[in-house]
Amino acid sequence: MHKLNWDDLRFVLAVAETGSVNAAARALGVNHATVLRRIAAFEEACGGPVFERAKSGYRLRPDRAQVIEAARHAAQHVAAAETLMRGGAAEEGTTFRITSTDSLCQTIIPKMLPALSRRIAPDRVAILSSNSHMDMARLGADLTIRPAASLPDDLSGRQVGTMRFAVYSQASSGGPWLGLGGPLANSAPARWMADEVPPSDVVSFADSSMALALMAHEGAGQVILPCLIGDAMDGLVRIQTKMPDFTVPVWVACHRDLSSSDTFRTLIDVVEKLFVPHQPALAGSDGPSG
Image 1 (cartoon, rainbow, N blue to C red):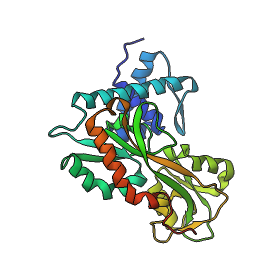
Image 2 (cartoon, rainbow, N blue to C red):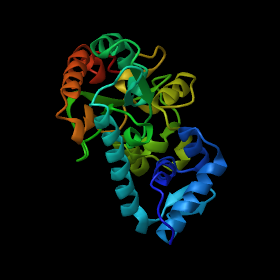
Image 3 (spheres, rainbow, N blue to C red):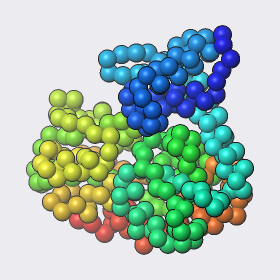
Image 4 (cartoon, one colour):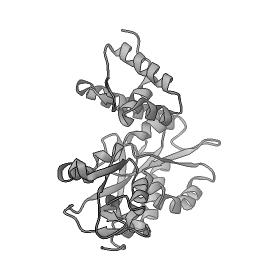
């Protein structure tokens, strides 16, 4: 076996998360051949394949799940070390990166960004939209704001709201279903659909709640959306189905190694306060009930 190049971890994690070489290349800003070369180098160094190649994409081999989990932790610690080296805060000429889901990046976060930017310093905040649960490491983000049942052990933060989901369509009659793809397929609503909705009833998929909302708005079918999005989109109505009432906490968090930093404690306090006016919309309590 060859010596492991730790930089290859970024490419392995990107393919594991996106499920394809092309998607990983786009996420990392490199070409298709570079990703293939880095994956091959990692597999050669580790003594065996990490992925199973199929027409539908790259699927993680069951016996390699712990390898990916270890790689994810390593990448997160590297990102934390880089932030600690700059003192736990953005320095002159650097950018403070906040990652969140597309549903929050296109609704609540732009409204709170001016106040948040003033609290840090002008022109130092970047918002990175991704539905991937491991993007803090891959994108080099400093703070994450996202819905999750709980925080992983390597993150520290607090709950700032509760996100509710409901079924929406252009008309009250519903129609065929739109599926939750990509990282959204791991959500509780997507698992409910997998158990309760026949595959023949699902006519399209998307990996973005915003894209799904627009598809439903054009009459493509009924879809499960965060109420934050569905209630705000003209032309969509909540419809009654057998789907349970799904809610998930929304967290603001940083890497656990950074949680003692005054900068991060202050930022988490600020984000929590800025979320307060948006909590009713997030919880679906100030929108139409169908």
